[in-house]
Structure formats: C-alpha cells, structure tokens
Image (cartoon, rainbow, N blue to C red; front, top):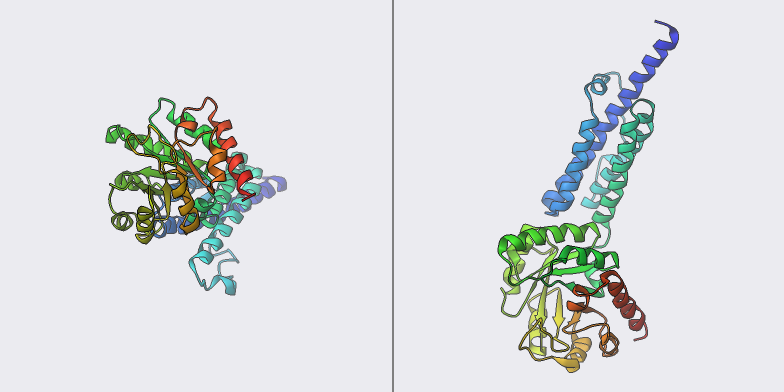
Length: 351
C-alpha cells in the first residue's frame, strides 16, 4: 500500500472518530433536553421533536463509524472545566446541553463533508431545528404570548376550517380557539389535534372551547370555559398551572368571579347581538368600559365584531378582540386578519 493510501486511510479513520464522538455528544445532549420536556414541561410536542432529532442522528451512526472509536487512546476523556461540574438551575442545564448539541452538529456538518456529504446536509438542517427548539424553551411563555395577542380567532364549523385557520395564521394571528358544539367527539378530537399542530407550527396558542378532556388529549395551550362549564378550580386541577384558562363573561359579577377563581383571561360580551350566541342580549359598551377600567388580566371583547364596527369597538377602550364570522367567512382570511391587527395596533397606540 502506497504512502498516499496510508495517509488517506489514516485521515478517514480520524474523521470517523470525530464523527463517532460528536454523534454520541449530540444524542446525549438531546436526551437530557428531551427528559425535561417530557417530565418537567409535560409538553408532547417538544418531547416528540427532541426524540425525532435524536432518532434521526442515530441513523447516521453506522457500524464503520462506531468501529473507529478508540476511547483508551482519546486524550480528551479526562479533560473538564469547572463550569461543567455544577449547575445552579434547570435553565443552565438546558442551555449547556443545547450548546453541546449545536456545537456537535456543527462539527458533524463540517467533517462529514469529507466522507459523508449527505450527513453534512442533514446535520445542518437538524442544527437549525435546535435553534427553533431553543426559542421554544426560552422564548415567550404562554402567558407572554397571551399578553401580546391582540386578535383571537374563535372557529366555527366549516368545510374550509383548516385552510381558513392557516390563512389567518399566515396573516399574523397568534391565538386560536377551536369551537364546535355539534360535532361527534371523534371528529372534535381529530380536528383539535390537527389545529393544535397547525397553531404550534406557526408559534400560536391553541385553546379548546369547553372540553378540558380534549384540551389535555391534544396538548392544547388551554381551555375556554362558558358560565355553564366546569368550575375554573376543577379545570386548573386537571390542566395544571402551566396551561391557560379563559372564561366568558357578560357582566361585572361574572368578571369579578372569574378573576377571583383564577382565570388567565376573560371574554367580555357579546358587544353586539350575534347568531353565535342566539337569544343572548348584547352586553354593550357600558360593560366594556367597566372591564377596561377594572380588569387586571388580559381580556377580549367578543360578539358581532367585524370590519365595519372595529373602529367603534377600539374607540370604546378595547385593545383586544375575539372574532368569529368576520374571519371564518372571509373571502381572504389572511388579508382580513392583517386588517384587524393593523387597526388594533394603530388605533390602540393613540389611546
């Protein structure tokens, strides 16, 4: 065997040792993060994402790469840094292992270009996915996103349900409630799961109307309760402290009670009479003014709000609105969503 061939073989073995070490490092770091998403956050979506990335990386760890391992001859096995020997909180654990995974993927991306270019391309894509994971873990919490949400879409039964919701999400919507009073439970469960996945893909909150069981089953961000639904206290016991609970209110007493019971937000209305709430008289602007002056939690005006009256609603002291028909029946849901958001952002800035 010529000297050139020996050098090539030696280089290949070194590259395989580097790949082997960093494949292990990436999977180990992801497993640490996955365990917190699973047991600490009880978040199925994030747990699934960690697991999928970890399993994809495992497929790259072929036998020939594993055989290049030389643990006894590795000079780095006994090297450590004082910062690696202690963690003061969970955030440090997660941050350290996210860095570990991202660094390992970057090494894989560069060295795999020499022997496994398909691995290099895949490692690059997984590295980008870890950046999204990092923002999900340390970015805006559910409560922060709720606070920042000015527009709330409440769905109604539609043949174009998923298309309309996605179009609204593309328009900047960050809060969706799934509401269907008539469908069978199997249909509701399937639709809720698909909508939940869709909302989370766009980094939007997903809320289920009435049904705590469905909210739990699909890992929704919370539940919205009417006055005749289960007590907030029971919903909180079932959902835990990390999910949102909203309550519909039509008067001062209902608002005060919802706040005292621990609601995270309320709906106030109906502002105008609406077929969504047949037989229920409009609460009008007097109640909205009271809510604006006295409600310490996020609240959304709801009921008959559309493109023609949104200015009047905002001028009445409203900063957040919930919309049903005006978006669900819109010819262009994306543009309609953008219009409402623009009105809310622009007019609210002058209040």
